[in-house]
Length: 285
Image (cartoon, rainbow, N blue to C red; front, side, top):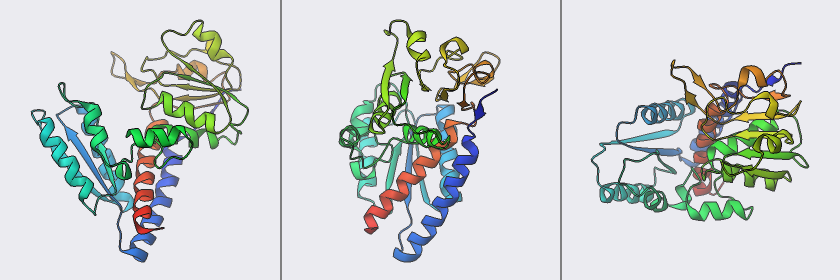
């Protein structure tokens, strides 16, 4: 029996509708409208699309969006000055620095300059540390969305064997930590993992986040597993695909996310959710 497809668009839409209601009530009760500032340096086409989509999502949900589009020639000093200005701006409750930054810029220095209280991406070392200790202020958006997608299946994460393919600071490590906090037994696989297919095959939950198109094949997946595909890759023919061979794996898995239309919409919804949570914190809610 083919897998049930986890519809990220539908899930995200329901979350965004709830966010819109929360924004309306917050503004009515406190006069505070959650504000999100997005900074894009350079002219990377994919990054420009992401930032534009986030702005549209903000407007639809009733948030206050600020866009800062800077040329690739912008100095690190200028960018840091802008970040510090936004840290002090009471209209802004979340700051997003779109990655990747142009070559020559110290991404870590820029991300660390964002106030932890406005770091809605959850990348600041303070927020990373709080996530590890189980007391997060902001949960990184994509991992947060992944967990909500797993929860939407109705399956209990506790006691499950979870395998995360990929160890990035943005997805792999934080999602592994979230699964651990939910009492899963977690394995992180990477390029040095021996018998990676054999390890993945033992998983009740598979999260693929390595950026290799169609990497996860049916022989790597346990029947009935939950398969979450974080990857987004463009093939030579222009088609967008994930890290999972969706067409074949869906015949074996219990639940699976599509690409596009899976994790992507959830990431933006979680960004809005984090921004609203930040505004509520300021309002004492």
